[in-house]
Image (cartoon, rainbow, N blue to C red; front, top):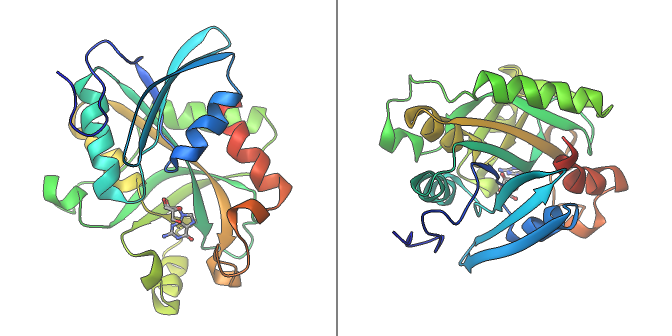
Amino acid sequence: ATQPHLLVDDGDLTDIALIPGDPGRVDRIADHCDESTTIAQNREYKVVNATYGGRELTICSTGIGCPSAAIAIEELAAVGVETFVRVGTTGALQSEIEIGDMIVATGAAKNEGTSKRYEAAEYPAVPDYDVLSALVDAAEANDEDVHVGPIASDDAYYAETDDAVDDWEAAGMLSVEMEAAAVFSLARRKGLRAGAICTVDGNLVEGTQKGTDTEDDELPEKAKNNVGRAIDL
Ligand code: GMP
C-alpha cells in the first residue's frame, strides 16, 4: 500500500537505504551514483533509487529529529527495506575530534522521546554489528579520519547547554546528532539492520557548533567532501 508520508509503494525501492537527514543531500549523494531515479518527494522526505558500482540502492531523507526519522524507518521497512545506513552530520563532543572527521556510532544515547514510545530506555540503541563493522572497515580503507564510539541523539538542538555538553563529554560520547537512537531502536525491534556514519560539522566543546560561525555552505572542504564521499564507503 502507498505509505502516507513517503508516498512509496510495495516494490518501489531496493533492500538497502542510505538515510541522510537533509533532502538536499539526497541529490548530492545521487550525483555520486552511476544513475538515479526520483521515486517520490513529500514534506521532508525525498526518495531516490540509484545504482552504484552495479549495486542498486535507495536514498531517502529522514528530516530532522527522531519523530521524523521513525516515520521514515517505519514506511521504508513497510515496503521492504532491510538495511539502513544513516549518513548525516554531527557535532563533536571531544576536543581532539576535528570538523570533517567521520564518526561511526557503536550506540546512541536515548536523549530523545521517540524510541521510548516504542520501548523502555533500558533497551540499547545500538547498530547492527555487521553494518557497524562494514562502515569501520570501509572508512579505514578510504583513509578517513574515523572515530568509532558512542554518540548521543538529542531532541533539542537549541537546548544543548554547556551543562549538557559537559555531561556528554564526561560520559565519553563522541558527538551529538538527532536521529540515530530512533533509527537503531526501530531497526532492532523489526529484526532489520542499521548503522550510522556521520561527518563532524562543528565541535561543541570547542565552541564551534554549526550556525554559530559556519553555514553549511561554508563548511571546510574536508567536511563538504565527506558528505558526498559517504557513498564511497
Ligand atoms: O542541525 C541539526 C541536524 O544536523 C540534525 O539532523 C542532527 O542530526 C545534525 N547535527 C549536526 N550537528 C549537530 C549538533 O551539533 N547538534 C545537534 N543536535 N544536531 C546536529
